[in-house]
Image 1: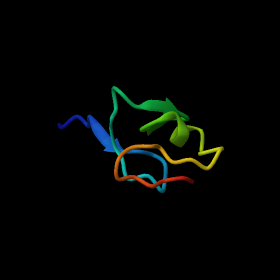
Image 2: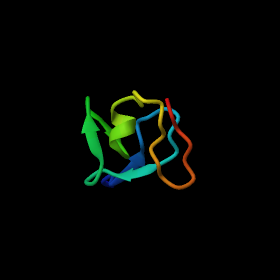
Image 3: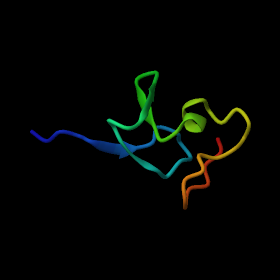
Image 4: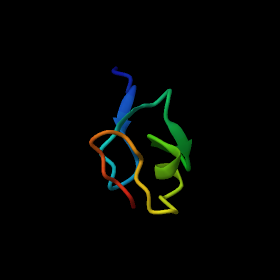
Length: 55
């Protein structure tokens, strides 16, 4: 059986792949950063190169 160590950020518009051990966990989901985990309250993206998420 394989163990999952990486997955897509739970933010719907985000393109980032996160390592589960380094991710921010909130509500049973894994996020690449605090902005994604908080739902982008200020409208800013995650700030990772190549990703333009903001909602």
